[in-house]
Image (cartoon, rainbow, N blue to C red; front, side, top):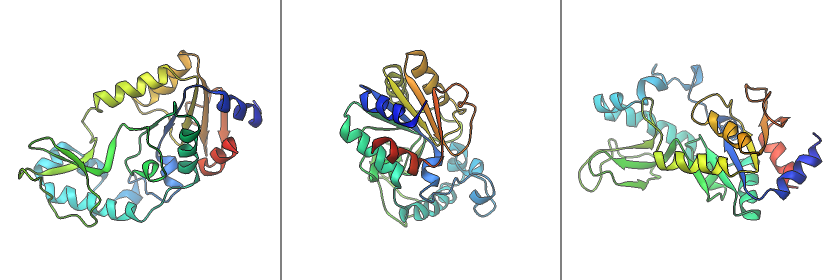
Length: 237
């Protein structure tokens, strides 16, 4: 399908949905924190992003997250983030589902964002359960709640389930979508991998935007290969 026809479909969509992954953040310079470039003091993310690691050594886990927060704090949204915020301004029914925890979508102006893996800028008390935004860089280690309990990063760790309410809202949005963009994600990690299938089964037009082909490419209605920061603004121009 030609580019202008995809643009027309998007502009005519009543309930568009987007799913974004690490590829969108990578265009802003956010490290993936996976693989060799994600090593910190010879620890892998899988060694630190677990409830067990936090219970064993909360200070060590927080030192790693403080390092991540310091890297991300100086990074700004890119044109893909701003384009998705613009899409929401044009169509209030638009829903953005993201696997990213860096908060760049909100920094770009998006409001109807479902951060299904949480946010690195949120902290949650392991004692009273209170959750709040915290942008301190550096953060006092280990941070504590007003009740005296330890605070943990407000992200979903390995071995934890995604928040049920956000997951329900994400699947509900996918089921009601008539146009879905899958951007910068391989589309193979569940449950996010199920969103495109749910939307397609419900009759949505599904397009993939990525720098390379993925397992989703063969099932999408259209594939726009390239950087999201270049492709998305073109769809809204």
